[in-house]
Each structure stands twice: as C-alpha cells, then as structure tokens.
Image (tube, rainbow, N blue to C red; front, side):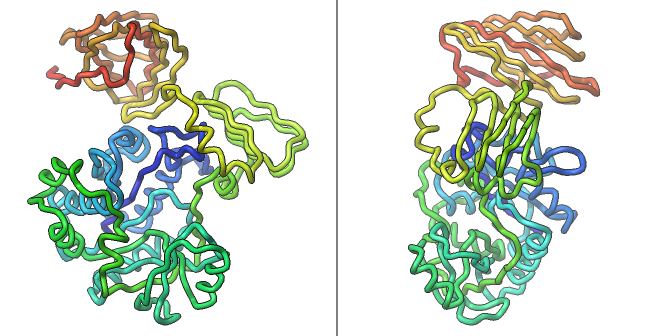
Amino acid sequence: MNIILLSGGSGKRLWPLSNDIRSKQFIKIFKTADGYESMAQSMYRHILKIDSDAKVTVATGRSQVSEIHNQLGDGVGISVEPCRRDTFPAIALAVSYLHDVQGVGMDEPVVVCPVDPYVEDDYFEALKKLADIAADGRSNLVLMGMEPTYPSEKYGYIMPKTKDKVAEVSSFKEKPDEETAKHYIAEGALWNAGIFAFKLSYVLNRAHELIDFTDYKDLYDKYETLQKISFDYAVVEKEPSIAVMRFSGVWKDLGTWNTLTEAMSDSTVGDVITDKNENVHVINTLDIPVLVMGMKDAVIAASHDGILVTDKEQSSHIKPFVDMIEQPVRYAEKSWGSFTVVDVEDESMTIKITLNPGQQMNYHSHDRRDEVWTVVSGTGRAVVDDVSQEVKAGDVITMHAGCRHTLINNSDSELQVIEVQLGKDIDVKDKHKFELTD
C-alpha cells in the first residue's frame, strides 16, 4: 500500500498537552504493553502490521517534522508543506513526492487519510480493501463512508445510489443541522471522513491540469503561490466517476478533551493520585504529583505549557481562551530527543535538553545570544567551531554568539544537558545551520 497521512492542526482544543509544535496526534496517552503511544504511532504501527511493505508518507508542515521523526523513526516519508495551502495543494505535493522522490508508479493505488482518528484493527483492513478497489480502476476516486452513529452536524454527508457495500456516489451534502442530518441518515447517507483512494496518475494529472509545474521540486518551490483550496472543492465535487465503500467499525474524531478521554483505557496518565472521583480523567506530564479528590465529570491536564481544569462538556469551548495565551512553547520533542524550558527571564532562558542515544543536534550558530551547556548526565561529544571534545557529567561548555556548535550522543544512554541562553533578543528563528564535516 501507498498511504498518505494528513497531519496538520495546532491542536489548541487539547491544550496544554498540545501546542503549535506538538499537535494532538503526538500526545502519548494510549496504553500499550510497553507504555504509552500517540495516535500517530498507533496509526503507523497498525498500517505496518497489515502491510509490512507499506510506503507511508506524512503530509505536514515544517513545525512537525522533528516530532514525526522522533515518534515514527526515519523509515516514514515526509512531504513538507512550505506553508499552509489547504488539502488539495498538500495532497498534490505529496503525490508528486511519491512519484518523483519515492518512485511510486503511475498505476499504483494511493490511500489518503487523516493521521489522528481513533480506530480499531478492522479500519486498517478497510484501508487495504479501499486500495484494492482503487487499483481495479472502475472509479477514478473511491471514498470510505462511515456509517453514522448519530445525526452529526460536524461532518459532510455522502449520498450513495444504493445500499451495497460499494456503491456509486449520487451526491454530497454540506454539514447540516441536526434535523437535516436525521433526514440524510434515513436516506442511507454516510459520514464523509476525508478518506479516499485513487490511482496515482489520477491526482497527479489533475494537479498538472490545475497547477503549472514540472516536477516535485518545481511544485515545492512555487508552493506559497498556490491557491488555497480543499481537495473536495478542487477534485471530488467535479469528478463524475466516484464510488464509496461503507465502513461500520469504530471511528472517532478525537478533537476535544471530551471525545479524547472516551478513548482512553486508563483514567489517569502520569504521577496522579485520585480519591472519590466520578468520570474524571487526569493526564500529568510533569515530574511532580497531581492530587485530585471529589471531582465529577472533569478533565485535568498538566504540562509544562500550563494546567487545565475543566468540566468535560465545557472542554470543547477552550480554543478562544487558549488563543489569548501568549508564551513560547515550553516542551517539544525533536528528531534527536526533547527539550523542556525550565526558566525564562528578560535576558536569559534556561532549558533542559535530552539527547537520545545515537543522536545529534544540527551543527548551528546564533547571531544574538551566547549559550552555556552544563552536562548533567551521560556522555557524548561536543563540537565548537570544528573543535571536538568528549564530554561527561559536570563538564561546562561556553559558546559565544556566532560560533558554530553541536552536541552528539555516541553512547547507548541518554545525554542530558542544561542549556542557558543569554541575550536581549532570544528568538527561535535566530539560527543558522551548517554541515558537520568531521
């Protein structure tokens, strides 16, 4: 299978565990035998379980690339959007990436789906079936339609011509009010979950018809000039040859705290103590305990970015309040490990850095700040202006503004460092990357 996972969004409805870098699909709250995994990890693991040779590509923005490599490894393909241009340009770029970079043939089927629904094993079997239907070429586009479980106002509706497992599509309906949704469902309508399949040639040819570009690199270079338009408007609503495959298994859009906690196997995650609570979920990512007593129908989430205490029903309305919060991201996972902001002052910032075994930072410099590293635990190697030195717990390395530096963990355990940034204008954009030659 060739699968494009659409990974976007800032995840503000799941603050404080999600932020502009760490969207909801990367929150590790689903229990496994080895600990906890995120929606993205669960999706990737299940796809490879169904098809170990599956070629998985994540279509995403630049801010998520490090997180994706951290959680999914280097085996996953990444089609990076230089900026946001809605789903049609994103899918066109990803399909071009599959063809020109990954070498996927024009007649091969491609499945596109979101990275973050809550699903079970039968969903992945359905994805494989969807790819098979697209491969036979009877329809240019094959959608997966979800059997509605209630008259939702959140989804658009697909109207099939028959009640067969696979049917031609009669029409599409925009997101309705509840009464209209009941009417659609009575007529056999299905939820449009944004899951579809096609032969690669179909979307690549449509992309060339609508966009003037030669190949993947050319499309990437002119991406910011493209019209913002959804795949539904650009392709689906103009295509006469569309089929829909019914799916009646578990499928949930976990977009709010209320829906997310419904899918959690445990009511608590992290260092949590509870007593005499009813229908309460607590997620604590801090290294201090959280005690919750006598609460009912509530969500409590604690992270380095903030603390949320909310009634479950009210939790879906937090976005405008989160929009009022202005502060730098306090925690993020990177391709090489993670960082946690410990303290912020007017002319300094203190950060705890964890470098995973076998990983290294980019070789980089800053124009407007000095930095001091104090090694807390582990061993590794520091390179400062092309001079390399072995480091261990207790070592201190000072980097002045303008000097190139990196940290390398060549051991089989974590390397932890306290980094103090010193300057009047500390900014994440103040960074230049270089090739490390040694």
